[in-house]
Image (cartoon, rainbow, N blue to C red; front, side, top):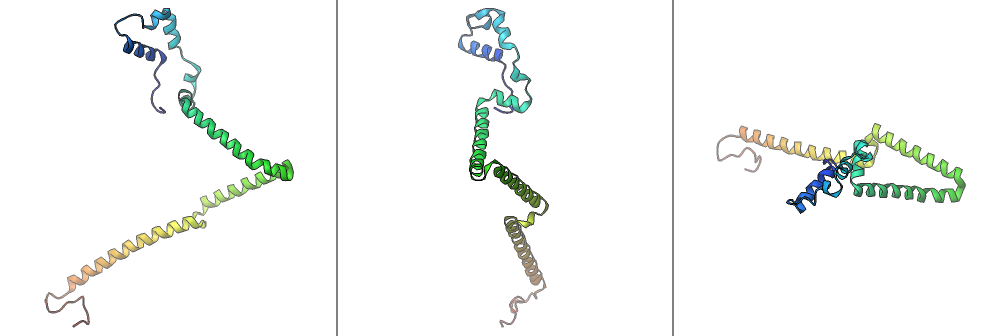
Length: 167
């Protein structure tokens, strides 16, 4: 639903009314209360004035529920980490531990951005890619040398240039 245009309420009422009973006038919004019903259905609401990401959440309640669940789980996680620290050493200890953890996480992120090769997983991946490319190049070089050797070989059937010393 995100990215698709939202149908106006009046258009929805008209579409449903025409699909249920197209031949009669009883299903038209004007029959329910005159032009007041149509005008009420066509009025913009506060959700129409929201910026794009918030409008998508307002028109898709399932996404809003998922977002609230994620935010709630984040608060539960923070509480689960904060509560034991505050119980053991008090609030000041919990704040110091949180600041220390943020500093360490920021340092790790900065080190990863500046020196990605300082992490073992990145080194392993780079070494694996290098080994794969090197083996491809060595196979290509061996094929080229073999083709060169065949091109230099004498054309006599009694003597094979590639088998040296096996006469």
